[in-house]
Length: 156
Length: 104
Image 1 (tube, rainbow over the protein chains, first blue to last red):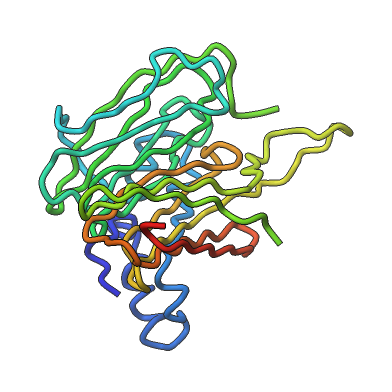
Image 2: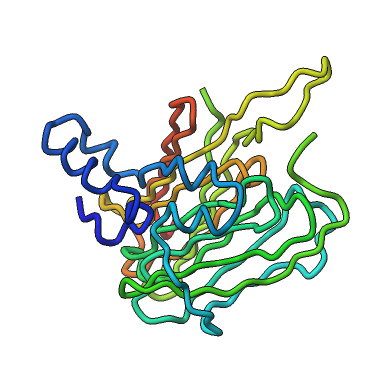
């Protein structure tokens, strides 16, 4: 398994563990195909901690990441977000909603798809920046777009 | 057993524009049911797409993704007749794989 492109593993020590587990025959090939689940990023209560858990360091602000999202979302439970990275050799795209109780939304490995694009629908709890990080050539790039919500979408 | 995914893909040259609708409650663990009990966390946490058996797109996702997720992504190097399969797995270990052939 090529762990270089899985930036979710960097800095978490999980890369070594996964390689060791695979070598020991503990990780079946089919399990290794799916992107590993990063518990620390998932449970982080703020974007900075989630980024740290994903091994993202010093992301540089970039105008080459395009986020399409509504300025005002009527329904915070279903907010459509489209992301395209114009940065050459983009390997992955990660999304955070800063003011959500758990900001990490997901990370998308586009290294093999050949097109650094993803569209998702997310829950936005309250008006918040939607922050995107694109990893390219081992460096992190970022931009954010503010989405206002009239009805929050996270809880009951 | 989860309901099937609806996968649609259009080919523009050698780029497959893929859109998939998944049936899943994507519970945040913060919602209360009619009796006032918290509905437990239940969400898709990994997604993999394969073109003719080769992984072309992968994702790890959280409960912040909306109920009945809709995702779109693009795959370069695709052609009519290619098999596109998508697999999701959730935090309870439930899995679902669906497949389409490109180009109808």
